[in-house]
Length: 297
Image 1 (cartoon, rainbow, N blue to C red):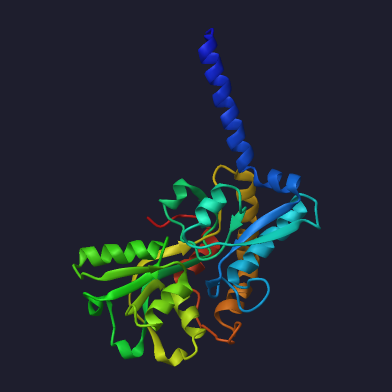
Image 2 (tube, rainbow, N blue to C red):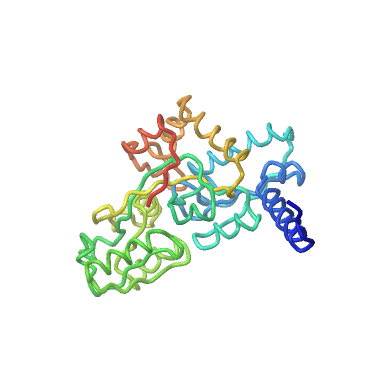
């Protein structure tokens, strides 16, 4: 079939746009040509990715990121590959990945179907659920105790969506206030501007352990909606996805993942040498074998 001049031009433009999209999604090519990779970190997602003092971030997800970076260096045959670190928040992590500012984000990001429309997720490496951090003096034991009261969460998180839905479904008339990051949300509670902080339970335990007076705080409430954490990368980038999954899956298969879990969840961690003493969940233990990237709904 002979194409008209207009159709031919449209075809050329569409083909060019497709090629551009593919090129933008080819992270390994981008890294090889630029001589650098930019990886994201969180400032207060204890014990996954956080700042424990001056210097580089630390954490469970940071160690996974470092393992991926080592594999990238080998793949592009550049041991001296420059590694740039970029702090991200719950709000900007996806846009910064999409626009090419960062190449990989491993932190405390929930893998869900909505986000899966914009980004690609690697193998799930943790499972958690929304609970509440509050001062023991508040008397809060569960969500019903927060009726008509202020409840904090973090902007851009699935937890903010979960607590809003629970509030609507149960007619609790909570006043939900959002911090820009987890430390900011905790400060809302610490300063009396909110009664509790709704967030992933593992992050709440980590934050509580870093408080000036951890004994004054408690994590309470039923666990709402179990969700998986996973590394984020750009969509339609099968080569990079295979590399990231190969690193994480290899760690799960070799036993290195178990050792890493013990290091961050069953041993003292900086800066206060807290030990979360958290056994591996059944969901995560099962995924060591399944190596699934199945999202939450």
